[in-house]
Figure 1 (cartoon, rainbow, N blue to C red):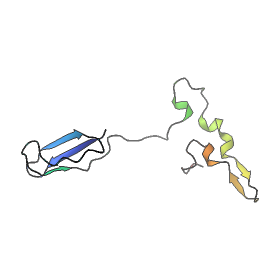
Figure 2: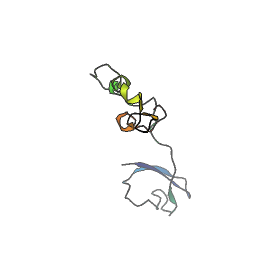
Figure 3: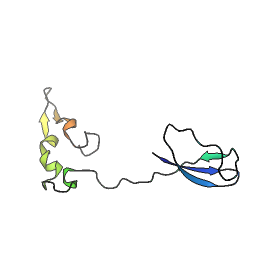
Figure 4: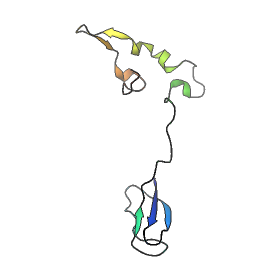
Length: 101
């Protein structure tokens, strides 16, 4: 469940509330009772860093990288129409959605 930050525009009381996505937003300030309790916009509580998950990121892996084991997926092959194309994007770890393929 997400944690939402609320702040009262009347008295300035702030509170973080654990709520379901389906729960209605809170309106009544628990400190002063005014109907001025509003949900705040906040930054995400986590950051994604690095280049992503690979087969070698798990403990006890075989020690070969994901690109080495799927090296054929990035090789250029001739398509039936005679143009060079890459192998199926679905066979790559990122699904072909990044700039590395």
